[in-house]
Image (cartoon, rainbow, N blue to C red; front, side, top):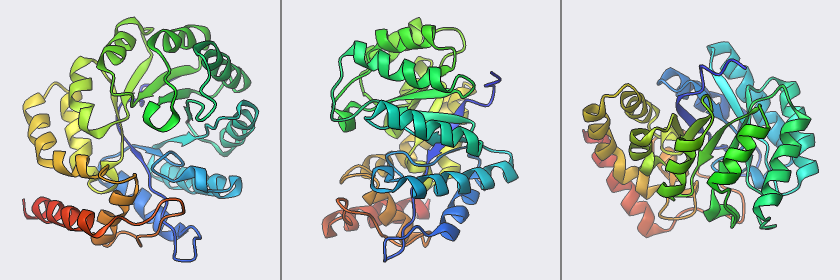
Length: 298
């Protein structure tokens, strides 16, 4: 598998909804094109930030198809979110995404079930073996799933399944992250799943970021990541501290609600979410407006 493209800044795309709850497809395409125009070459639809768990299968397939159409026209890549807590359903959906032409699947750790590490290994290896020609990125986000993919299990999967080629690490556990980097096979990639820790993770050997913040400020986020990967840590630090407050504020309330509010303020979309997510509170709005105003004045 040629994965020389698998590095740098990827954006976990938000899904814009209309007031009636339907997907605003023209807005979505515009947002995807904006990412590529501002230096992001990897698009990640239907992840946590895209509110994928509130979407039907047909809706998710449509969003992924739209992403692929935009990406192929602009020579960008697509990592499509396909994971769930149902192994058989994940296999079925991942096969459909492969047929659409996605470049890679992002498969989250099973949520709610809380499997053992042996269960994790069985789940991911079954999925990988069902789509052997499609690269897979694991997604470890214990704060969302209540289960952790350990460093040992990540290593086992990377060794046992040639198409498990990367992991998106959002555990916040630097000991675990560094153990994965230390023990991983030669071409296995590790991406940060947390904007705020990306600079430190790249310094430790990470290969990129799957970003929320890039939805709002793709140019600055991608410049920070690329500078760090090129060894330009002075430049990367300057950008990091410039955008740090926004990166933190995106999680004042459940993501992507803060991000969607900021994007609404920027005139990029309507601030509509699907239940159980709701718009951010007045206090949060005030904070986000202040942060956005400060960024725009720099």
